[in-house]
Image 1: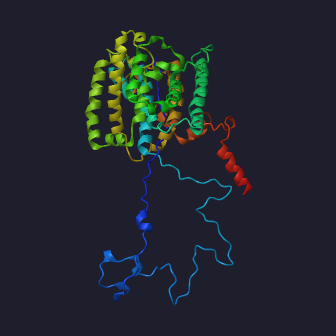
Image 2: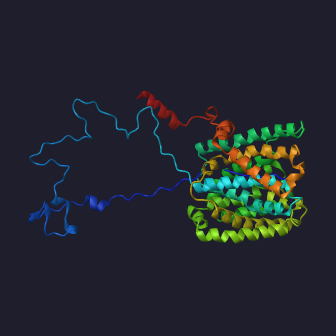
Image 3: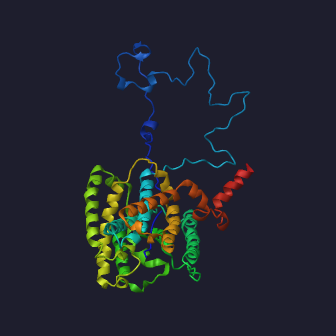
Length: 443
């Protein structure tokens, strides 16, 4: 029975630099005005436009002879109380910063990737009776989790171990890991009739491995920013892990290390790299690449151990010679990167009906595991018609509908206490925040 994987965090749209006035033009004194030539309608008649200067026309902001001065509307008027400038912050009220726009492309990619994760879990019990289902399973497992990890790495580029980001790491990753690890343990005790199954935060069960992996990866982000050749170094670590059977199951370190290159790959990507896969040529090229991948997976399905794609075991634990771990790690990384690029090429760039669901993919990922595991515990796949072509299509559509519903805003609001707890009571307030509140009270 496989373990599975997935999700992750939101892009910052770069702001363009505004050109400042040239200091030379601003500081140069104006030349004295020449003799006034004949004018027509208040403008020089013979002088070309490009030679006129600001001294040849009166400044309309200055008082003109014969006309009464009008009060500047921006200045206080006698008898009227001064009104606060709405553009200035008011004491006691926090400044409102404009919300950063979310990139529809990445929200669409996260939603489509989580749908593929749910479909892969639904296809797993069907692989033994359907070679087509096995081929789809292998193809999807080649890229769906790597795609999600690449996105997680891309959005971790700004992580700098500052107090605010560490708080977010704890409340958004560590606390949900503890909550769902305990919840899954009690679910297994009840649904699988295994009341003695132990609670262990060191041995992630089922989907929770991704949370502890993301926690470790993100903590190492500052290191990957300063080393040379980060992706080759991460690949070397993954290769060593794949030939080290003594690593054990603590914190699922095999998965943490073998999936590490995809996170580091996401860290080194830049917006222009994603622009390359959004080109029309990339979308066209992705079609034959995916077709070839499906054909190869159809051939390899009865010949290959799908556990290679889970990356939770060393080569020796899979009954293969040690050297094959290095070969498979490098080969699967190359295949995964190609298919991830093809997947990104077909992700819509515009806002769609499912774009808003991209913000709730971690909810769908963790919650759908109860149904996925329950279907095995309660023998739902013992129904014979599910192993027919119509049954396989039904299972696929049901998995897509389930994960979609679990990513919706109502579900997010219902489970936010577990997925995004504020936990203000657990952290010290920043000195700047305390000083700001004190000055606001005094004013």
